[in-house]
Image 1 (cartoon, rainbow, N blue to C red):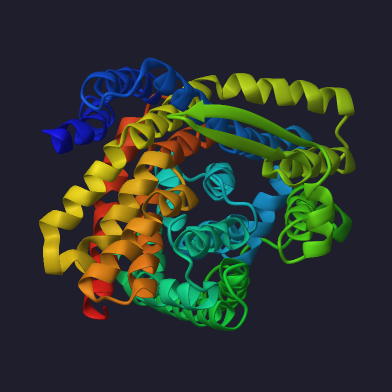
Image 2: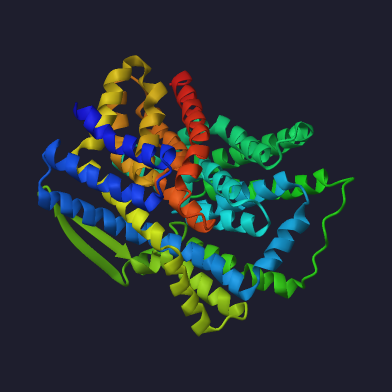
Length: 499
């Protein structure tokens, strides 16, 4: 019964959003109250601990998740206000007239680069918004951005998920990073194909889509493997995405041969540079403050630091916010300064920031409730109950299901990093009892977590906000579920066969 009670919040959330088509904000509020009730009466969590668990989850929801979502949307709104989005649209169109090339470049290439540098929803929000500006339908833009934001999340935010996994399990970073890339190798070839197929599903487009996806996937795989094996967790997503962007652009030129040539650029080099300034500044700030520059990062980490102490079940949890390396702050600086360079006025840009907050009001409720109920589930023992039950039920077949536990963690928390904190030690512990290499099984947690990211309610909330589709969370979840399930199953088979 405990396992059934632990699963109820997830089941109810899926039914509300996916079957009954209840909006994300309402579904998350209902699920929060049901989770709180179960935690109190089925798992004996005290009222103060439950309240503090929710507050702790709310803190994590506000910073970094909602802060970064807000600033990612704000960065796009700045481009709309300064009208520089038209320059970017024309430039993306000038690279190729082919839809598969455009979508793969924006979601897998540019989106993967954003994930590798910033993470936390930027790689869903910004590519989805750009696709809509190019004329793609909102539902398509949301779903394809969610699918693309899977593989790169393993090394998102400059490798934080794998670095945290190494800390939790006590395993070395480089072997873990290499194992994650190997487990995702098949998916690096398949996900680009799914993206190109969704962009252009015609039968006669199949050879072109195969050429694109296999070439881009293979280059991404080789680049990520070399980066993981020789450098570590910080750079695979970044280097892999840059390599993919180069190949996509070159193949785009090849595919366009014999077709009507895309319109040449009508903007000057200076106008193009100003149009890209928001994203260039964001990426520069994220990179300079990343672990790749430890001296700068250490200095910034010690300035403007806020700490909040919350006691849960006798343990004092310290939530620390290092403002000068906080992703939301970096996004704001890049967006605001970039907007000024693009000709925007400071007052108008600040008014636009408030409008962006109002635009996300339903998303704010949704994400706070989702992260809040996952925090209550963790504190009460529901999440651990589900993981242990799955491990006990699968026995010798456990490696086949190990990625599913990671996917469960990301589905609940919206974060690959959080999934590794929740279940990293569990995976390593099961490996010790089953004779499987703990590095391989721990890496499986991250491999599965990247699949759970596709249908994470938090990611879906980001996609609906970027596409102005609030209230359509259920439809997007329903459309994305088959891809997420297939993804996790493939990851499980790979982990099992080579365990």
